[in-house]
Image (tube, helix red, strand yellow):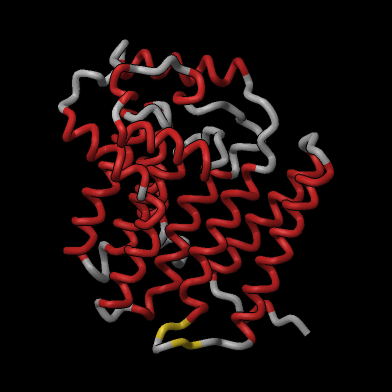
Length: 271
């Protein structure tokens, strides 16, 4: 018999999100193959989470269960992308309008080359921030805080992901004309990278900005010094997402604010 009481809060959050996607797949008009893919993703998450709760596995002193939320977030990201159908012209226009309000007509071509390279690299490898943050937590002797860490990070990722079925738009790089800065080798790699390994859809708020800052904030109590370093990287990722035109400015700003709100409310929610 399945015993849900053994699940951690972060696991319940992940399962709930995949079940939400499964329900959304019934509403959004999708090819049958994509709908089935979402349901299979949800079923897989159910199996691995309940399996990990029933039979804990430890390899070389590391608990496999402690790391599973990172895999669930990755699965959820691509499962969410399966619900992307077509951009809303009205929503895209709204995002562009906010870009003009916040950025004006800046193209960021005038940024020094080393700074542009830094922003491209930090954004390209932002997916490593979550496992790096959790590895730091464990390395500093705070493995007992695993569930709290992943609950904060999961909320920060799933809330932005969860708007995609209803607020669909293309990222700026997919719409805008190429800039002079886009001709550099690092920049070409970045554009090819996002085309190859992302869902090629815009999330509002930015899941990259929200999730990255959530990692830093989740470290604030158990590892404050590490939190400062991760916070600098998180803000860099948010800036890079706008400079590199991977996100609109309003995406990054609301993503950072969302992470702060989740972290602030976490004690009141028992996280």
